[in-house]
Length: 154
Image 1 (tube, helix red, strand yellow):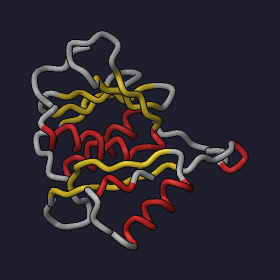
Image 2 (tube, rainbow, N blue to C red):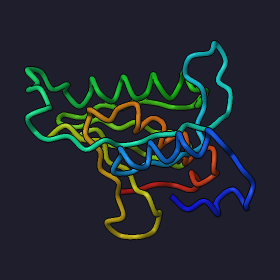
Image 3 (spheres, helix red, strand yellow):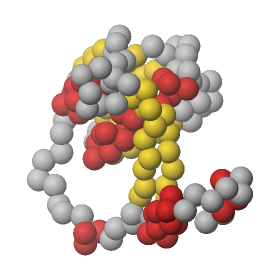
């Protein structure tokens, strides 16, 4: 871990905890988001880390949600975080969650997809339904940074 991140100041236990996270995880970081546990959303930061697992550790799933089910849950999570004006629309084999300037597709084979760089062809993020809460955080992060602007067309 690069100890120059604190500008030379001693952070004591904080560095030890970050060093432990860095040693055990394959990736880690932080992003802006909004609370999901308070009655009114509050802006803040979320810290995340990813721990590598082998396929043996992942239990088989008997039920994968349908695109419309996953879209409804994502829409509810975004509204709960204060992103009013979020809507859900359903088609025959896919659904979309729309908010100001961003469209998130929920589609087979169980993935969310959205454009990460407007105007750039094929610049999409694609995440499985299992990452539902992470997808909600990423959408909120785009919104908080003001990266959600303009019209997103397929």
